[in-house]
Length: 346
Image (cartoon, rainbow, N blue to C red; front, side):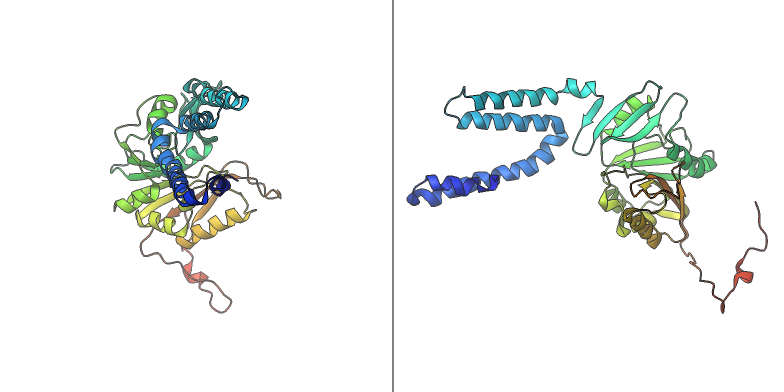
């Protein structure tokens, strides 16, 4: 409907001046579209926040109504002015603080606070991303990942290089003072908020934070890692499509050292009961042969028909440069006697 404004308004001008007037209207319409699409997202949202940008839009709309109204005290002007003031109040810093919204930028609405249980929680776009408390308890999927890949090397003589894609609240490996951690996340505000409201302390001298898109970071470095923990998926509608492709997984694989470990955390169906979960599994196995898939927690209900039942699912892969994918046993070519280990250990 708004797109018809220019051709409709042009009918109010004479044919002699129509081309000049229409040209001016199209000029200002194009400039307005450009500023709204580019300036708002690249300049306003990163500096003053999404909520204040929204308030500014309401104020500009109210100003436009006042500018175009012959009677400045008409009901329309009064209503638009009241709406603008209501928008400013509802998006004010005081209201944000009341709901423990620490930042509302172009990437996330970041909520951080302490529950009655004593758990300090971090919500990113309404997703419970991190948990921590004075007993150093974390989300079960984080504790599972640490038990598998961090605890065995926490006191190793030679520190390992660990890359964490998707920093969250920086709880993964927080107690590890030995290995070298690099946290990568697109949101530069996460570190300060996590240190103040979640960890209650700095992340540690053996850890660094790179505020950069994951694929941009991987493209800009040749460093390889002993462990890569991929935890950039919030679940629900917050799924970064560019981080679930075969090209991205190949980038990740190229940054694994020999015998390096990749571990992921996906939010998906525990028993492949939807297309999304099947396609992620297909994509992972196309890049990482013989990867291990583990459902974390008690959501593994094989009898459920639900297509929306989701759980934390970990994929675990150990990298070898010259990996032999093996063969398939058949009745006429069966080498199992020669292949199986001659000795087994518990």
